[in-house]
Length: 151
Image 1 (cartoon, rainbow, N blue to C red):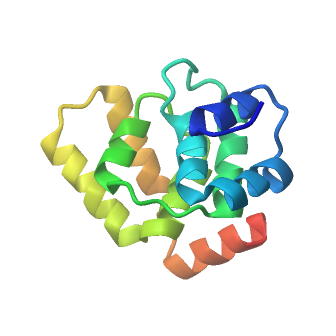
Image 2: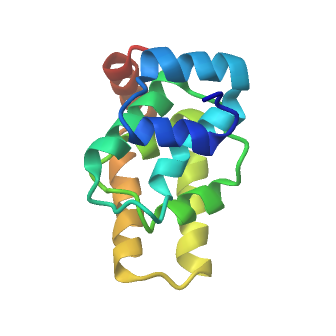
Image 3: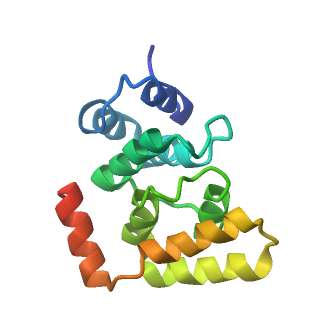
């Protein structure tokens, strides 16, 4: 199967046949950051999986942080879209956004979501969790992420 889309990559990822360091990195080199981001981020917004699938989200988050594909999306939309399926125990998604956008932009996006959207209790809880994963100062977050993911 020749992979051409984020969905193709995500399917292989769900099947457990692809590892971050090898197959996904190679796909990133061949297909570019946009498709890899879409494939990995898609794990956090896919309505066909449920938020209890910690391990698959943890692996996708690990790959996001290890490979750091560029993200051109609107941060408000990216965070809001993740609130339905994202497992709050997976710190890698907020940390990835921190590496791409910075803490200040994330907090501004969260504030915009809180003020402009009617959210369920579970979504509000997840926004608070985003803040929790980013509560340390930037230097500490950067050093923690770099040490843990060797980036």
